Image (tube, rainbow, N blue to C red; front, side, top):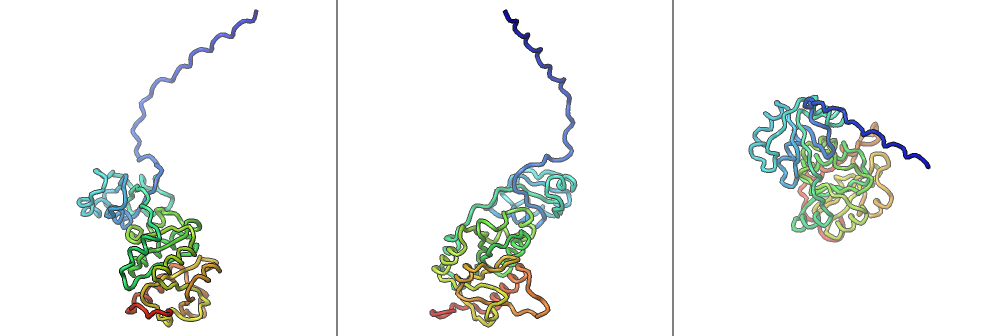
Length: 279
């Protein structure tokens, strides 16, 4: 008759030890926006749901007027040090003593863009064909806000996510300019054409300068990726190709710089609706 193995002794739990309170807020997942301008813009945006607000004493003084009026601000901003923020945010984040944890903005579709511009005689929409650097996309959003563009459209893939780095580069413009993600750029261009937009692709080998193209009314400006430029199929769906005249000593402009120059060129003219029959 075999003997039964004796049951192992009950495991003794170590005695409870009091843990001192953490000196820094715990690192948490979620979308963190940082920097005075991005945080202020997020707090002022009724479409943005803010979860936590972390401020140094100096940042709280800077944002005090906004905090007293922003309805969606967390009830009590959490007082932190710069070291606390360094521990929570990505390495090297230039937070200026302010960070807010938020939900992503509600999605905006191409139909929202065409609807919002339906009654306008003139409008500019930017389409970024696989621009992948979040700093470039953020800078383009900032220029789009400065020159009154209606939206910035990017592909759902091969484009940066909504991040703190993108929002910091946009300096608040992420809350003001719709960043529209589409599954298919070419289909989006066709939808915009159907809504009365002329589509101009910007490339170094464009046959005419943007200033000479006489664009007016509703215009889509398409910019290509940092390295490859516009893809062939995207080019084929543009009504015309244009360029920015630059000195021979420089091969090309950074895509965010090119966007700013092109937006200025479109904004400085009296962009009256063009006659039907061509750009």
